[in-house]
Image 1 (cartoon, rainbow, N blue to C red):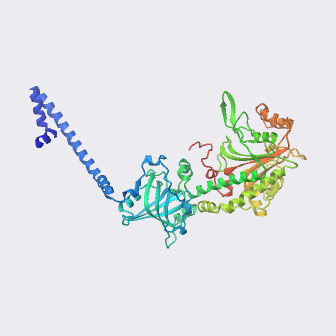
Image 2 (cartoon, rainbow, N blue to C red):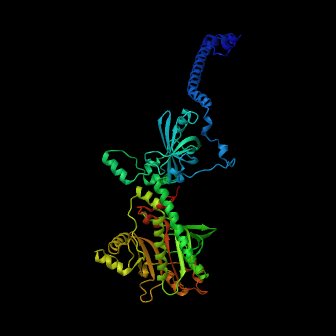
Length: 559
C-alpha cells in the first residue's frame, strides 16, 4: 500500500497522461497530439520544481547543521541577538553598567558590563577573535578566546558574523596586557564571557569610520609609499552625517562647541546678565538688506529673524539691564564660502552703557579670555583628537585683549602695500592680511578693531560724537577672520527713524521697535557672534560645516 501511495503522489509520465485523455474523450489523433505536448510541458515543469526543491533543501542543510550545533552548545545562552521585546523597556534588571572611559588597570580581574558599537571585528582563528568596542570618544579591545565552560567556538563565530557599527552588550573580565594596546583609548582588555547584539548595522556601510577619521598626514604618507587609502569627501560626510559624527574629531568638535556655549552662559550669568528667548518669526527685517527668508504668516508677509537684535534692545527698554540669548539665526545670503551658513547658532549680548561703549568691549575681552582659558585647561583630550585629524596651531591671545582703531588697522595694511577702499569694510583678503600683521607685531590671534565707518554698519548703530562719518562700533577677529560685530545702539527714536530710512528699511515694519524707545530708554550696546564660527576658528578648522552639526547652506537642506 505504501508503494502504491508513493506512486499515486508521483508525477505521471507523458504516455500515461495521453492514455488517460484518450480514454476520456476517445478523440482524434490531433487531440492526442495536443495532449502529449501539454503533458511534456507539465512534466518539464514538475522536473524543474523537483530540482528547485532539492537545491533549497541543500542550502538549508548548513543552517540546520548550525542550528543543531547551537542547540548542542551548552554555552549558547551566553551570546546571540537580543529579542526585540527585551529592548522595549520590558523590565528594570538593576544591572550595573560601566562607561568605557572608566575602564582602567586598577579594575583588573573585575567583571564589567558595557555597551557600544563594534568598530573593529578581527577574526584570528576559529578559536579566537578581537572586537574593538567604541563608546563616544573611547574604545576598548575585547578578546574572545575559546575556553572550556567559558567561550565556545560557536560564540567566536557569532562575534565574527557581526557587522561593523552594530550595537552590542559585552560582559567580561578586565585584564591588563603586558604590551601597550595600539588603536584604543583604554589600555586594558576585556576577556569576553557574554556577548549580545542589541541592533545590527547594515553589512555595507556608506563608508568606514576608520576612513573618515584619517588625517592629511596619513594620506601624504600613503602617497609616498604607494598605498591606496579611501578619502571620504565632504559631501559624502554630510549626506551620511550620522556616520560622520562618530569619528573622534567630530565627537571632540561638538564637545568643544558645548563648552563654548556653557562658558558663554555661565560667565554672563556671573556678570548679572539674564537669559532671554526672542521670536524668530518677525514682520520686518532685523538687520536690513535683502538677505531674509520670507514667508506667509496667516496671510501676512513675514520673515525669519536675521538676529535677535531688535528684541534684545527692547528687553533693555523693558528694564532688564543686561541680557543674553543663545538661539538660531537665519541669513538668506547666497554665500558659497568656507565661513557662511544660512542658519547658525547666535550668541547675543545686550547691556546698558553707563558712559562709553568700551564697557561692551570689556565684556567681550573678559568673556573670551575666560572661554579660551577654560577650553585649554579642561578640553585637552578633545583638542588632541581634533589636532590628530585636523592639525592646527594653538590660538595665541593676550591676558588683556588688544584694541586697535579701524584707522590704525587700515594704516597697517597700507604700510604693507594693501590698497583699501576709503571708509569701506574689510574684505576677506584684507582681514586675513591684517590678522597676520597683528599676529606678527603683537603676538596675538585675537584682537578688537573699533570705531568703524558708519556707512558699513547697521541702521541702529550710534554715530561717533566727534565725527558722524564714524560709529561707536567694533569687530572682533580670530586668526584673521571676523567673528563678532558690536556697537552702541541708537536709543533715540527720531534718530533711529532717520537712520532706518537712510538704510532703505520700511519704518512701518519696525514701528513697534522704534516706539519702544519713546517710553524712556537707557543708552545701551551689545554684540553678536556665531557659535560655529568661534569653534571653527579656535580649532583652526578650514570650513564652518565641520563645526555645524547639520549644516544649512544655500545648497543643503538635508539631512
